[in-house]
Length: 76
Image 1 (cartoon, rainbow, N blue to C red):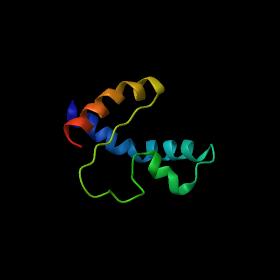
Image 2: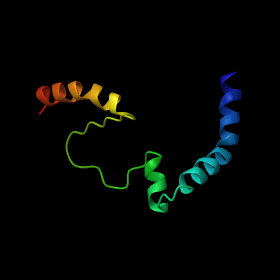
Image 3: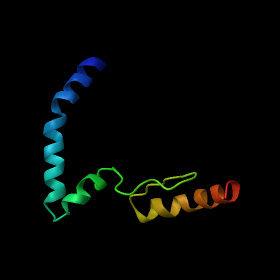
Image 4: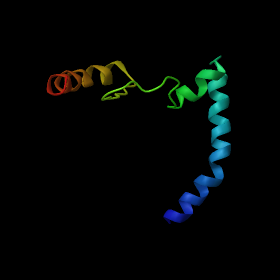
């Protein structure tokens, strides 16, 4: 079943991408920012250790603050 799902997703990916890209462009998102909204960085990665946290809501953002604080204490 896995190979079937993988094959189907490979075949459907271009159609899904065009639909998603169209929705991103619809509200006036600048062309340069479309890939950024899909998770592709536009700035080079800074030197040193890097931790990236993603939160989609205020509640999620608040919930990771303790984790960020503790990581900062453990490895400044």
